[in-house]
Image (cartoon, rainbow, N blue to C red; front, side, top):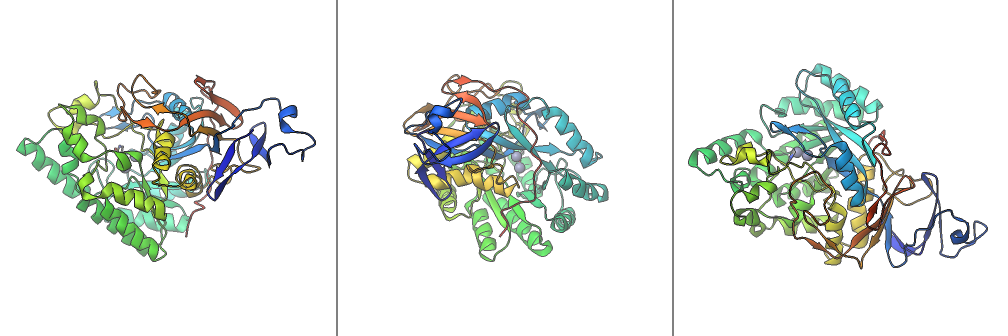
Length: 467
Ligand code: DUC
Ligand code: ZN
Ligand code: ZN
């Protein structure tokens, strides 16, 4: 009651009636359209006076307990979804990772077992196709019917997840036939591996050189190649974690032609830079080793990302939450950056970090809701159950206080299972106040009322965002 409901098209004072797990009505404040003022008839009233009321955040890209780089991402589905809830995210879409030799159906089953009974908020899965072959391609159809409607391939990481162009072409043909979304990690991994080996051989082994050995040219080139293969096959393409201005320019051109190509970026590319990683003392820069890498601010990537966020050529903001501790995990790469597990943890901070863009006038209030909630819900086939405040939608609701304050940092607001924060020292003019997941209050002011197992698997439709 009393809040300003924000959607992708505007903001207005509205009360929301929730019954059980679902939103049943939006009413003008004080309305007696349902017989009496809701404040007198409801079992529970959440006071949202002076605050924004938005759909729960949808983070379309997380890696809970992901096996990677000789270790496993440090957040479990339990700890990671709890942290997400604290930060106003009420749905994640995580990645099931097919190992070579494994059937994608079996991978998915395994990921269901990891997540079941553990999650505080709702969750879906994308499928990483680690090995494109006849069996995997057949399996994709089965996964679509089970609500896993997006498939990620890698042009990076030769010998691990890498697919060559022929395999990419085949997977895209299958995705096009199914109407499924093809997600691409677009970096030229073959060329990157040569630059990495040369850097290490030169003795340039500090964390910073992770970034310099993955230059923007190899993101632009791979992005363009992926766009052309998608154009040829008709597969809808979603380029994950775009960080290079030039890669975005390729995507914007393709979109201008009317091609179904979408860009995702992440808060780390909007705020953090290669220059800061260079300036970090000792091995500290390891906490920002992720792929695609942080890019040089001086090259204008950040400005371009914010600009394309405004124009709509960046469709979604996700975290690529892939946390590793410094001790025992990132530490493996001391003396050789190529052994640092790639990833940044941030599932807890996306809504705040992006609201800071609103506070600074870089994006509008409506665009904040769109890139963090509505667009990812539509992109991944969960709309209008997720991503919108409307009758019939799940009651996933965040009360956000624009006059509140959030100090991000380890030991401050930090619920992720990590021994550091990649976002240490960030001060946000805003605060997640109350969070509802399917009608249940999971965060209320400073206290947590969620529980493992409340979160349910979301069986997704095909993307609802195609041009
Ligand atoms: N990039 C990361 O930083 N971590 C996980 C996988 C990826 O592509
Ligand atoms: Zn990736
Ligand atoms: Zn990722």
